[in-house]
Length: 339
Image 1: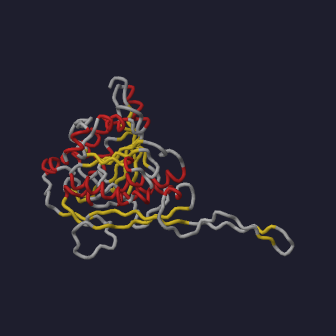
Image 2: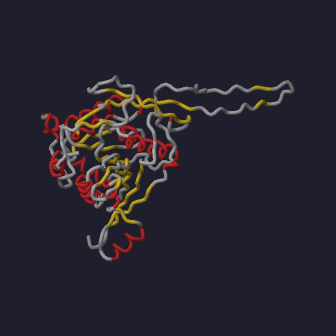
Image 3: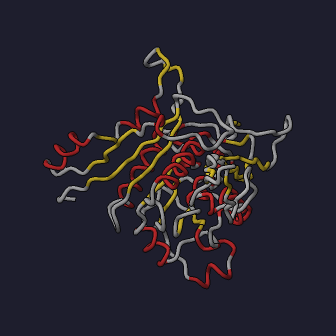
């Protein structure tokens, strides 16, 4: 969340908020805290990518057993599950401008979705990807296990420094190369592409360490997957999000956005009811395939949204509750010929 946006909305920047995700944290603890999220996977090609301890043993040889008649005994193969640990430094409570320092449930359900896709298909293998509003970097770290490169973007040095820390802590577990995760600052209120800094600037000035190079921008525009988790909570921020999405998804290769959100309900004096206004504003940007077809014929570009059935996505990460208020949307941008 950006300060300018909050000033326009009249939001108190000093207001303290707390995520529901705060594993084992001592009472009244307010500093950075490292939570360990466990996820269980069957032993398969995906599990081979991770290196920490597991519940079973892998056998490199096979023993042949015969019964008393000399017939081969076929042992039933046991299903083994392997536990892996994702370590994330985060805050338990923060001001609204620093909510990216906390872990939110939408990031965990999106991590579940990525683990499901990676374990059942090759869709994410070797891709370039970009995460908007990455927060702690949790989602990008999970994707980096199979992606070629993931651009981890957010705003603010403290948040970006924390992303770098988390990427470093988990590198041995998720087996990604150091250059696979690239932490960059991206302000949605500004035009795409962002300002470019030379390589010498990045090497000599700490101020520019999260700036973009021309090669970064070219590779980001060729990303096939865009990720976002829990970035829908203020209408003007949602407007900025779709503004930059329109620019990003109009250039380079065709892109798919996977956006996870938590519907938040509040009592509205205008509606005299409990409503999720932020969610409704988000939905106003999305069209069905049929609606989009009509708009394209009229020369108007549009975003097509499809709600993903979470009943078909296994729960790999164990330390959160997946309620009906969590959703993942698959979103694509259809550009008219007149655009």
